[in-house]
Length: 147
Image 1 (cartoon, rainbow, N blue to C red):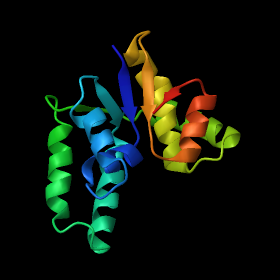
Image 2 (tube, rainbow, N blue to C red):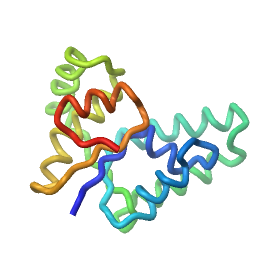
Image 3 (cartoon, helix red, strand yellow):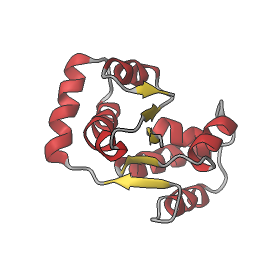
Image 4 (tube, rainbow, N blue to C red):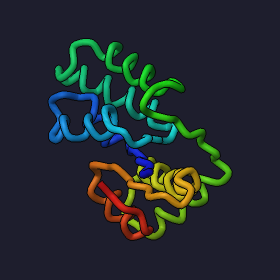
């Protein structure tokens, strides 16, 4: 079985109908058969993106979108949140920043995928799902399969 690690950029595509590739990413992350994980950091990033979209007039009811995301992150939902172990993740994120052209939060997501999600995959495939080009380049350079 393949494990999917979803960056916030992909999660936003899955929940915002006006995003490019919305149907494809929605099907993969929220309606697919493969388990999906992300860092608990995604909750804050997702709320930020949702409120920004509302301020820009793209969403009328941001609280509904956030409530849906929170519901999907419950134990019975399609997305599992991985606790952020800052003592392990932040040094790895700093290493990634020194090696790749990444923003800090993108490096944290990639570090969580490398340190935690790979272990959860248990020898099965891990696919890093992102819509951020620089993050995908870094993930691939670190040995991850990207989508």
